[in-house]
Length: 130
Image 1: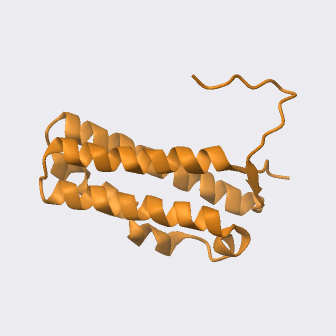
Image 2 (image 1 turned 45 degrees about the vertical axis):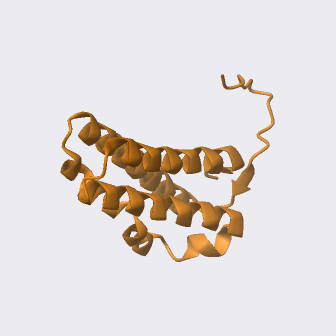
Image 3 (image 1 turned 90 degrees about the vertical axis):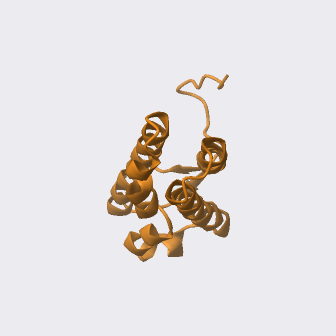
């Protein structure tokens, strides 16, 4: 169970110092990744893995092309490592979907992907826009 925060709780995570425009892009990007995970889970549940290939690939390494060039300059190496791992994990899931690997293998890749999300969200937070 997660600890309950109170308004007085100090957030121990490292802040990512982004501009309000970068922050807005970043939040939209994370929502897109969450949607991708949802589409992948639904495709696996309906036994139609091919339905999620394109969304998994879009969140893979190809997705790095859309990152504003200023964000890597402002974020620490530990963040960049987690971000790169996330994109690589989406590609690994996509390959599993394409090859129609046994569902437990794809789910294991999805678990690795979401564990990476948890690690990042546990370590970093976005500062409130000024």
